[in-house]
Length: 77
Image (tube, rainbow, N blue to C red; front, side, top):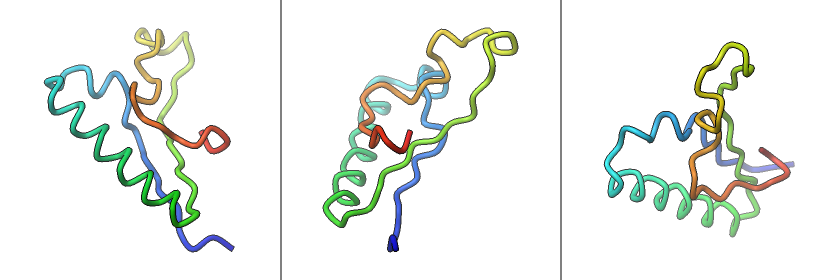
């Protein structure tokens, strides 16, 4: 039984593209620090995002992908 998980929700390229680079980097760094702490405790890190199909989302070229620089657990994404 899991004690806890870290959920990282909707931290996507589209959302962060309007942020200044320093702010975006600070957020991604902070999330990665929390993820590292969660992993030391044996907690999974799960990244989730709202996804659209290519026909309904004009920015499907990676904009809805999890933000660059995040380090999620592959088996949970």
